[in-house]
Length: 397
Image (cartoon, rainbow, N blue to C red; front, side, top):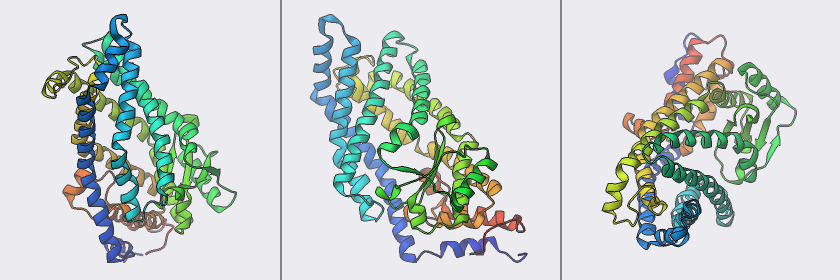
């Protein structure tokens, strides 16, 4: 093993895919970068269109009127806007989330099945986001100068609540989660969970192939709601025990290292910035767009708020990606330390190249990649294998 060459081993893993498969992955990945810009343009155009119709302003006047019912008015305006926004962006969503995915062989759903799940997702997101926005407008009315600080705290509460209930309430609406049957896979995952100090009583396999053929697993939830879930795609693509340990070890790393909490803190920092910018920019942008709303407290100005939010989010993409890459690299390291499956992890990573090109330029990776490149991750695993040769469990590629 003294002659083991991490660079050559990395190249060997990546060469497992044909040049055509690599080229297809590059086209898919780089096209996805453009989706960020086009998605922003669609969001801005739809918000502007709703704003110019004046429907939100008329609705707010009709409900609020002389009787002063700001809570009812804000609720009506918010939910009408969210419903209109979902309907008007549906053609774009159908292209980006269904047609394009199907063109690259990544979507396994019929259009009718996709539309049904998109509608259900739209209802859930409308209810959650709508409730948050109603609370937001109540804060603006109560604290017109400092609402942005209070709203940031409320945003974190909503995020944490969502993380708690998602594995219990939301995800089972879209997929069937079946307890992993007794056997080597369950035993390996349970043993790894105990070693990693992750709850080992909730280990599931779910029918991820219902929507996609992406090779994936996750550890979701917080505290008592945490559970390990492996997509059946993993096993359809021939995952062995080394791969299972490597992949699940990575996902357990996110839980054990508290990445969800760090993510919530990062979201809170973003929320402070976004709400402060809304406070400062709303009067200027509302005037530029000739909006009927003259104050950020007027829910009829929600399209103006949305334009500010989606623009700031687009500009923050490189920063979001940097935080995410750090967490993913940290989870890889956790997997290597706890599972010690550098070859298992590498074999699994190669199977993700179809939707994430393996060798981007440094600038492309910095701006667009929310995971370190597959080449970088496999090389890290091979470097680990070289440094821990006597303990490595897997075989050379």
